[in-house]
Image 1 (cartoon, rainbow, N blue to C red):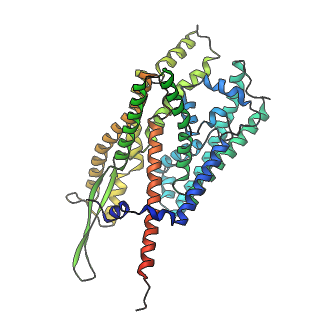
Image 2: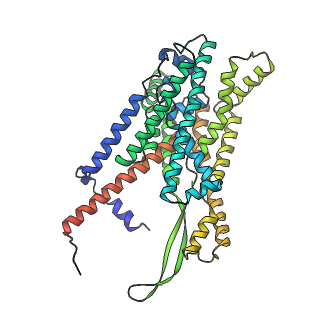
Image 3: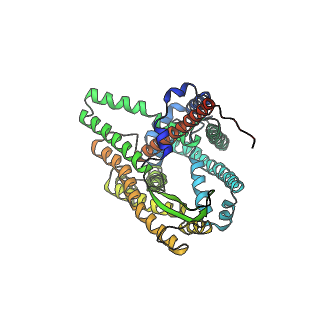
Length: 454
C-alpha cells in the first residue's frame, strides 16, 4: 500500500514548476556547471599534439582506457586537462570507505559523526591528489614512450619538464572537477560527482546514435539489429528502475510507551534492505581488474617480438580477454558476483545494526535481540544479495553478448547504463522533493497559519 507521502508526490502539480524560483535557479546552475565540464574536456594538455592522439588511442582500444574514457566523456581520448576525470576521487573514496570498515582507527573516526565524516572526506581528497599524481606521471611517460615506438610523436618536447607540467595540469583538472561537483551538490540539484560522470557518458550518445542510424541507412547494420538494441536498452532501463527501488522491509517493533492520552502504544517501523546494496561498485571493480592485464599486454606488445614465448603469451592473452569472448564473459560474471557479496559485507554490518537496535529497545518480532538478530540479518541479506548479484550480472553481461554477436559497438555498457539510470532517478527524486516543499509552502500561505502564544 502506498504511503501518504507517495500519494502526495504522485499528485504533484507540475504547473508549480514555473513558480518554484529556487528550483529553477538550481537547475540552471547545474546545467551551466555541466557545460563548463564539457568545455574543459576539449582543452588539451600543454605540450601535446592533439592531431596524433586519435591514432595512438585507436591502437589501445578494448582495454581499461576505454572504461576511463567513457567516464570522462572522451577527455582521455583527447588528452585534455580533465583526462583522468573524477575517477581518482572515486577510487580514493572507495579505498577510504573500505579502510574505515576494516581499520580500527578509521572506524573510530567514522563513528564521531559529522566531524568524523569531514575528516574522512579530507583523507579522500588527499588520496585523490596522490592517485592523480601517480596516474598522471605514468600517463605522461606512456605518451612519450608509446608514441615514439609507434613512429608518431604525440608529445612536442618529451622530457621531465613535460611530465611535471602534465602532472600539475591533471591534478588541477581533477581537483577543479571535484570542486565543481561539490558546488553542484550544494547550489544545484542532485549529486554533483555523479552528475559529472553521467554527463561524460551521455555526451557520447548523439555520436553513437548518429553512427548507428547511418549504418542502418547505408546497409552496414541490419535494421533488425538496431531495433533489437533499442528494445534491449529500454528493457534494461525498466529492469534497473524496478530492481534499484526494490527492497526487503524487515518489521522492527519497539516496547510500548505511554502516549499523550495515557494509553500504552507500541511503535513500529521498518528496516529497508536494498536488493542491490553494492550499487555500481561490483561491475566497476570487475571490469577494471579484468581489463588491466589486457591494457598492460597491449602496451608491452609493441616492445616484445611475437615470435618469442612472451610475445605468444601476450597475443594469446589479448585473444581470450577480448570483449565478448567466453573467457572474458565468464570471468566478468564471476567478478561481479564476488564483488557484490564482498562490498555488501563491507557496507552493511549485521552485528552493528543488531547492537543499535538493542540499544534503542527495538527488536524483530520472533527474533531474540543481539546475536540472534545479527544472524537473522545476515541470513536475509545473503539471500537478497543473490538476487542482486544475478540482476547485476544480467544487466552487465547482456550488452557485452549483444556487441559480440552483432559487432556493433554499443557505448552504453551495463555499468554506464546503471550509472545513467541511477543518477537520473536520484535527480528526479530531488526535483520532486523541491516541488513538494514548494507545494507545502503554498498550502501554508493559503491557510494563513500563525503561531499563537499559550
